[in-house]
Structure formats: C-alpha cells, structure tokens
Image (cartoon, rainbow, N blue to C red; front, side, top):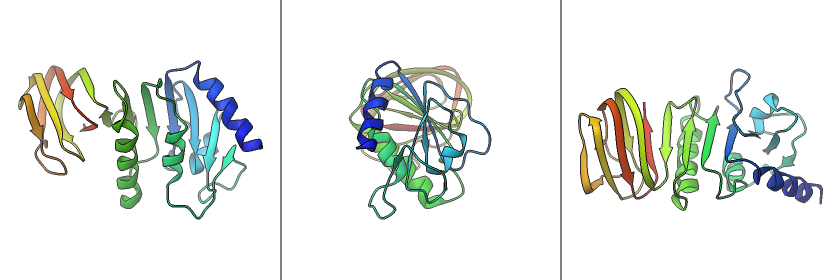
Length: 200
C-alpha cells in the first residue's frame, strides 16, 4: 500500500514538469538535476529530498521509496523508465554508461524501447555525450565528429552542415557501421522514423 501511495505522489509531481533526470549507480559526483530527480538503486546515495528512489538494493544499502525484488527479468532502469508519463519530452541519464559492458548495452536497449512509441522526445546520457532521439524532426548545432546508430530499420533524413548527408527516405542500416564518423560544421537537421542514437 505504501508503494502505491508513493507512485501516486510521483504521478502528481510529473504533472508539473516536462524534464526528468535519472541518476544511476555509476554517478561519481553530486549530479545537476533538471526537473525531477529519479534515483536508480546506487544512484540513490545522491538523492535529494524532493526526488524519488527505486531499485533492488544490489548497489545501495539504504531505504528506497520503491524497493524492487532482486529476482526479476527486468532492470531497475527499465522499471524507472516505465514510471515516466508520455508528456515528458526530455530525459537526462547520469551514471548508466561505462564499467560493465553488458549493463551498458542493456541500458542503451532500454532507452531504445522507451523512445520507440514516443515522438518529439530526447534522452541524453552523461551530460550529452550520447543523444537519443525518438521519431520526429530535430535540429542541433555541432562542430566535430559524430556517429549515428540505430537498433531497428528506420528512415532517416540528415541535412545541413555535415560531411555525409542522407537524402529523404534513405535507410540507416541498423546494428551496423553505416553511420560512423560523420562530421558537423554547424546546424544539422534530421528526421528519423524511430529511435536514433547520436554519439559525440
């Protein structure tokens, strides 16, 4: 009953915001929280009073707002993402990349799944080292090398100030090196029909 009450309180908070920051177990310093702080297991050591913590206590020994069972077929991040309503358009993830390759791959896959049925929503890993776009039209300014990657077939249009544009209705080959090592020189516009990873 206490868990249900906590989730209802969380849903009320979500109605007032459009940005969420998820803090994961690999966060090494006090994070900058944008919008609501959602602390995932080991990331809960940084929890602020108005934040919400969730996890199975395998990397945090304190009390969590929503404890999960340790034996389950989904990750703590997967559950935390399931709490985020559709009107949230910007998700920041801190402390979910590095150290354990299997967990890192799982975390990228969970973000793909999270964005798959959303539009005009962005996720940022570790202070925008990796951007993930849902389907939609996007524009950003960047100078330097970047790589695009997708997990499923999608149509991609990439235009503007970049070395290797892609024309309308071209496909970015999924799970391949097709989108590696592009270069930006300023404003870049893209349209994607599904979740798209951009590594800087």
